[in-house]
Length: 168
Picture 1: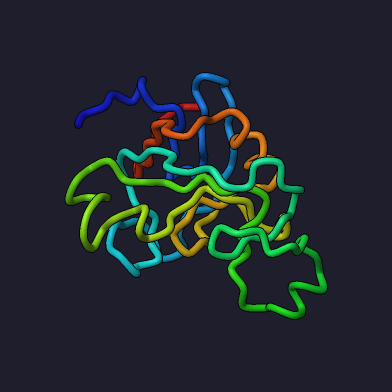
Picture 2: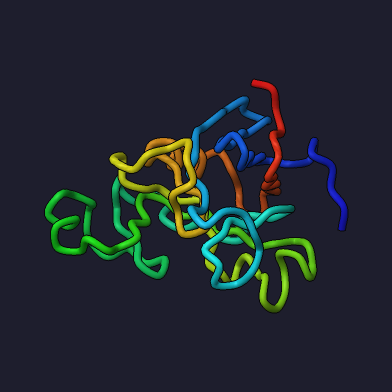
């Protein structure tokens, strides 16, 4: 299935570390995979190409709600939790779980974005934005991901590019 960039509900530019929502003219700074760009399973890299928002998790959750395996833990992110769980990869506030749409590239065995648990999600506000630092997901500021979650429906089209997309 072929799509045109004009059809995208979300455009993610990995070179510029930005996420753009054309319909609402919203622009956010993000953080993608520390290990770089790629579709291979267990790589820790951020996948490219056409995706859709397969599932949205966290509707009406409080800002900084902690998620593990897409379930609310009952915790609200704070300094004490960081001290107790220093190695945890914090997934906070909202989750937009992505599914690849390109068979053999980001969909299917060994490269499947959905099965790799690639999300757009909130992260601690102490984490830097604008630089790759995630485990392959797209990290956003908590208030930004909450706003995005409210703007974007399930099945929304997402295009992730390794090259600069816009001149903003």
